[in-house]
Amino acid sequence: MSLRQTLQGTGVALVTPFKTNTQVDFDALGKLIDFVIKGGIEYIVTLGTTGETPTLSKDEKKDIILYTYEKVNGRVPVVVGIGGNDTQELLKDLQYFPLDKATAVLSASPYYNKPSQEGIFQHYKMLAAASPKPILLYNVPGRTGRNMTAATTLRLANEVPNIAGIKEASGDMAQCSLILRDRPENFLVVSGDDALTFAQTTTGMDGVISVAANAFPQQFTDMVRNSLKADLKGAKKLNDQLIEAYDLMFAENNPAGVKAFLTELGLIENNLRLPMTPLSEGLYKQVKTYLKK
Image (cartoon, rainbow, N blue to C red; front, side):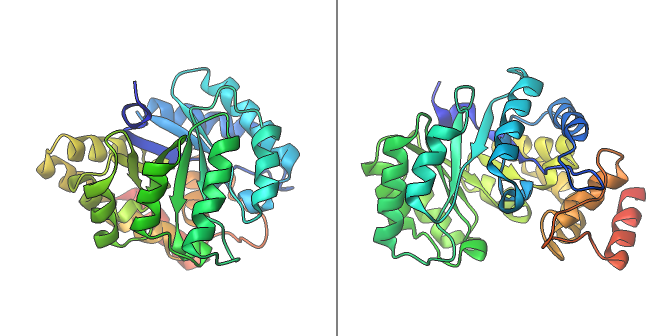
């Protein structure tokens, strides 16, 4: 089975629950993993940006990966996030982190440095050659400061072995359409924008790596499945119910929004690591109101 088939549907970019003292809360992480798998998600992404990875130590990341494998116990595939803006350091990370049980590695395009398209290409080419698992590109210019163009994505897809897909979060529908038109047959293309997932899956994307699916795994997964099988009426009905939740989740920062939802659902404590802070009081009240509805 190709990676495009294995990772079709909804992947969830897991948050990292913290205790009041900001230590990783593994009990809460275990509850969350069970919750999203029971809700029907197709796969788990650990150590994405939603997991507050910039504030996790290497040892913590390793512990989270190992715990996630153990807790998931083969029920769904696990994708591990390993990204950064120092290519040489990432090559070491690909050897350091335990990837034996991972299905793929999700790696965000280099941030802050603002490399040229050639720099982005060469960066991923080196990672792909060193990685023991297939690499999923991650284009998120709102965070990285540099868009990876459709031409660069397609060049990587066609020329570099071990580049297996992309999480495309540019929000540029024209760019997405070009990638979908010209991609190789087995190249996975998933959305990185919860609010655009309904529209993007109807135009040919294979699914999504979602933040909202932490809190609404069943509704979100059903929406994506309906959309993929062209039940647009059913998909739209579910998506319409979630639109307000998407707005609340990303109104201030991610993952403060989704952590507020998860706290109200009784799954985690509402703790983040600086520079991230919990959702403001007014928005938190709106989260409570939405959930009551």
